[in-house]
Length: 193
Image 1: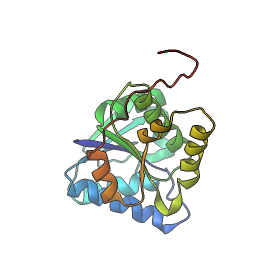
Image 2 (image 1 turned 60 degrees about the vertical axis):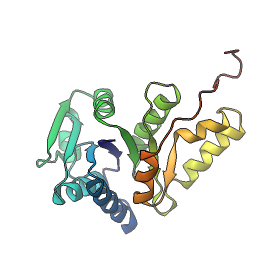
Image 3 (image 1 turned 120 degrees about the vertical axis):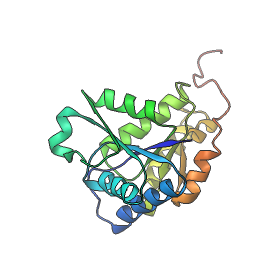
Image 4 (image 1 turned 90 degrees about the vertical axis):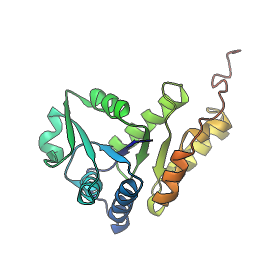
């Protein structure tokens, strides 16, 4: 594992622990000699983690669609920056550059990005680990929603393993390094495969 994609809010959120978690994760990335790939903004939790990694001498690659330059405010001091035409291209480029995915707290964009990454893992499009940094229980209800999907018969039990969740950034990175995709099972109950 060389590069980790971190999806994060373009705001810092209402609790100081969210910002602290972004700083801790950034420190752990540098400590483990891992490069950061992220959305390219200088604001919000995105900016916090990028600045932390850069301040500690780490490498940061940003990827941003042209139409977001003004709203998200492009970070001007990144190691590498890719300008892309739209969100689809952004996610594809981030996925191409990264060996693992982590979601810090965020909103719709963060949810969509992490769920696309885990869906692609479930479908076998990639074998990369996907994780939630569950800061102050931020993702606890989402984790319960995944349990509900299993209980409701929409997902095999072992497919919960496609999404790692942890509250400690150091332990989370260890779990990413030791990740093995779950054994393939038929996710379509109505089909004999």
